[in-house]
Image (tube, rainbow, N blue to C red; front, side):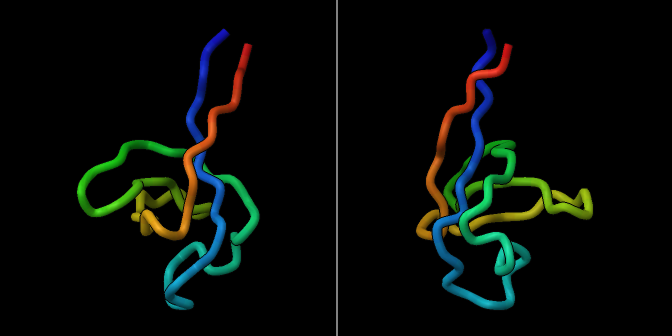
Length: 62
């Protein structure tokens, strides 16, 4: 079994952010750094998610 990390968008503190319509949804966690979490937009672009707007969750995948 492989563990895949995801982000659950819990809020959007800036309505201009790409994930404003994804509150309550999960997006892939690609990496994290001092600026925040990096994920992939539905359009396929890599973009940032503010730390205070998401929580890291683990999904078990076989």
